[in-house]
Structure formats: structure tokens, C-alpha cells
Length: 65
Ligand SMILES: [Zn+2]
Ligand SMILES: [Zn+2]
Image (tube, rainbow, N blue to C red):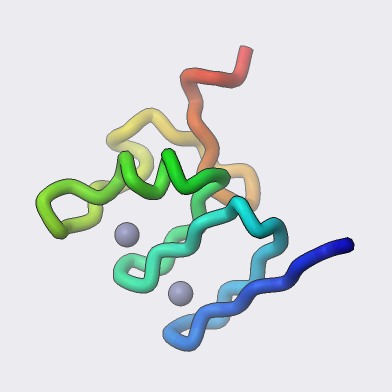
């Protein structure tokens, strides 16, 4: 069963309960762990600066390969 999520603050739609969408910067992450990683001291870091790669959602570039 596919679970659909949407954000009240932007047009993003995504699937998967484990996905994490940031209500501040409106990026969508592959996991809550990546979401936590991009939050630093109450602010959002750019996923690119954390070596994440974009594939519809932000994924960890370190875990691929
Ligand atoms: Zn964010
Ligand atoms: Zn959003």
C-alpha cells in the first residue's frame, strides 16, 4: 500500500512513511536520519553540502556504491 504525503506549505508530494519532508526548507529526504542530519542548531543545511544526492528525494551519497 502506498502512502501519500503532502505539505501544507508547498506543492511537494511524496510517498513512503519513512520519508521526511522539512516544513522549513521544503526539501524531502529519504529517511528521518538524513532529515536530522540536515538540521543543525535549529537551522537547515543545504543537502548538497552534506554530500546528499537528488533522486526525487535527497539520498545519502555515501551509502550508494
Ligand atoms: Zn530543512
Ligand atoms: Zn513543504
